[in-house]
Amino acid sequence: MDFALSDELLGLRETVRKLAQDKIKPRAREIDVTGAYPQDIFDEFKKADLLGLCIPEEYGGSGAGILGLTIAIEEVTKYSNVIGLMLLLTRLPTGPVMIAGSEEQKQRYLPGIANGTQRAAFCLSEPGAGSDVAGMTTRATPDPDVPGGFILNGVKCWISGGMQADWFTVFAKTGDPKSRLHSDIGAFIVDASSAGLSRPRVDRKMGVKGIDTAEVVFDNVKIGPAQVIHGGFLLIMQSLNAMRPIVAARGIGLAEGALMYATEYVKNRAAFNKTISEFQGIQWEIAKCATEIEAARLLTYRAACMADEGKFTKEYVPLLSMCKYYAAEVAVKTSGLAVQLLGAAGYMEEHPTEQYYRDARQLTIVEGTSQVQLGLIAKGVLGHDLWWD
Image (cartoon, rainbow, N blue to C red; front, side, top):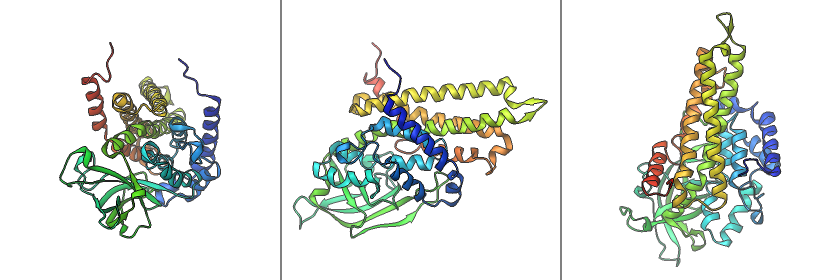
């Protein structure tokens, strides 16, 4: 069993680490304050050929896989969770295309993401259907004028990157909108320029400001047969399963950044004739978080390797969900400790700890809440997908 990264992945990590320190760290606070999309950082990723990490080489990517993307996101998220989300969005909407798309769809939609000429978003959540995927009401009805085509109606909400997207992966009911049958859900690729598609509202968020979270409305949007992805509900689950380590990487990077910043602070902050870091109670809290970060990393890197091997079907769900659940919770715990270690200063905007704390909360919600992950893990144990004899 070899825990060492390959030379290629080590080189990738160093490249992204340097870019993060030189370009992202100086911009992180400004991005949070203004909420403006960091196009300059996107352009840096484009220049460094980092937008196609998870996309196979035959479609214009670098073929670094989910593990490569996980490593890159961990590095950038030490300073900005927004930038981690920017990289994440190269995989979330393209995942269904890579898993179940036709060759024509892959050739049409993947190269633009890899070379930075296009951006995409993933449309699943609705005002009344977040974790309850089968409760969605967006509907795709057969187009009477186009054999194999559909007409899409409905509203999707909380769509990360929704305002920047050139195309969307959209899930909708293909049968009775009240039906909860998994077979009644379909997947579609929808161009943002389609007639009837609008983005009327941008959400005001607590954190992760800089990439818009938007509402996307479909009003009699026509979908041709070439835009249908075959897979339905199973495709949703497999796509999200494969994303678990990528989301977890945002948690690991955030926790690392918060703990590093707080540790340097307590090493230099005097109190009671010594530095804060000399108090055993402080040392223990730092040690506990450091241990949990490393545990989260092991869970996450293993899950990333599994996903790259195609192991994101039902029997692997417990191990995939563990990394997302644990890394998100570690991010919340560590960012909370960072605020506490700085005391009143940690609550103020002159230090990034309050930003880490706000951004961390998103990770326990997006792409399956912590509670959903616990349910999936428990279901796997009860069903012996995860068992120890």
